[in-house]
Amino acid sequence: MAEPLPMAEPIPTPETIVSENFERFPWWLILLWGILAVIVGIMFFVTPAMTTVLFIVVLGAYWLVGGLFTLVSLAFNRADMGWKIFIAIINIIAGVLVLAYPFYSTLFLLAFFIIFIGFWAIFMGCLHLYHAYRAHDAGTAVLGIISLIFGILLLVFPFISIMLVPFIAGALALVLGVTAIVFSFTAKKDQAAPLQ
Image (cartoon, rainbow, N blue to C red):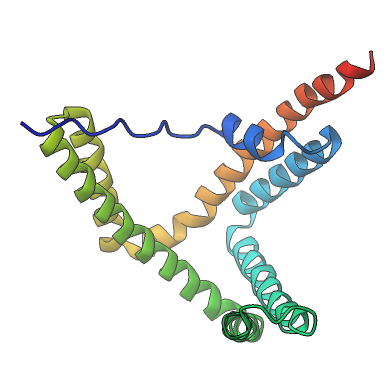
């Protein structure tokens, strides 16, 4: 009889995501981040197409600037020079293409994202089903079936999935933003406690 596999790590909640990533920052910075996340979330719901294109354009500008900075950094640090040049060129090309063709780049990146998530969900579903078979765990089997169905739906209905991405991103931004705002007040009390 096969040994039972170790239990999977618990799924992180918005509270744990925020607390793990922001506990070292001052409370006012967490509050500012939360407010910005809420604004971005609302924008995704109010103007999903424009906000998504704007988000992709900002991402393209980030890639372009990051690639240029990587090339400039070679003047001071030549470690892993070949790898840095390769990454910088890829970032610059991606950034230029996104900025030159923002609409087509948005469609391409969203389609790529949906396809990647679809295949990843199918892979994880099969992996969970295999673990469930070996460990005789019905809960893992259910999780595997859900993941498998989710991945298949993404690949069978890619256009519907692409249209839903802005709303999913908006909901995630709202949840994380509100959580960050609430956490900022807790952090304010904790950071002020030693001063009392």
